[in-house]
Image 1 (cartoon, rainbow, N blue to C red):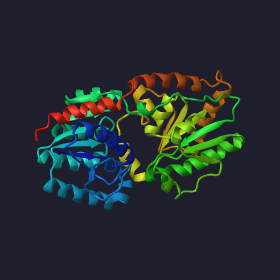
Image 2: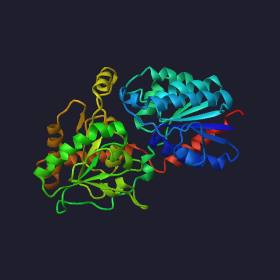
Image 3: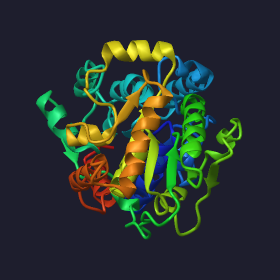
Image 4: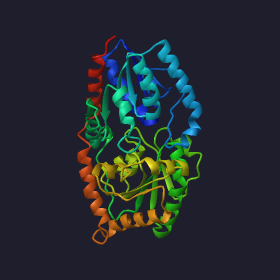
Length: 381
């Protein structure tokens, strides 16, 4: 049996590599292929292209990756024409996976499972029709998604919890008000995110340092981000923190922080699991923002607020001033020392504890892999 695991960015590759390791034990004679020459190929799949990870957010930001996307598309057509797979596992990367990979797979009669499908509940709800037409089964990672997709006519939708729980470690340190104020800053990992977010973080940190001269600001260096960060000037108060064999950079930073400034994305869930108060922000190009304003239908953007169904954390998306973020951060910071006068601190902690309970119970990925194994056993060779 030939199986294609199709992911485009680093987070998808990480999940794909873990899935592949589990599947190889159950299907020792299967041929596994990966879309890119990334972590999935390093885990034992044959890459169908020489392209490395593609990770972009936004309509205009994708223009910078057009050459890679063109190469991927050519490689896909060649692959499906010459050695079509019997099964395809799609991971995130919606525009490529849903509009090209899934169509080619359907045309060749392959069974298709989508892990982390497009966020049709937020925007471009028309993609639900494509999911119904092209996808056999869907595995979601947010608690409200199962209800949404089933309500829209997708019957084989499964939720096992969020895989982030599997790498979550209880907080080993809990700095109190006697420790130097420590703030974690999380700009995102995609190059387009760094372009928009580093200048904002630099300005916020410089201004907060004037107010809190003893404060520390820590930025975790996730795998694959070192080279990207080297393209930017980082404000001098910010310390870059690398991971170790025992702990990720994010875990090391979160163990030392009182609060965090986080770009909207999966990192907000990591911070939420620590029950750490945060301020969330996000910025894209003006053109992408204009398009997004017309099509995004959710009242919130950050995952903690979406999961809670209410405004749990302050979020500043696109149209904001740096002063807005600074004031929200000051409220959280003052809550460390005078919680009664600044209830946003304690209210966030209580709400974040509830969110943690909604994300399921670990281990999550073994249950997901087990389901994918059962799905593949139904494939006709």
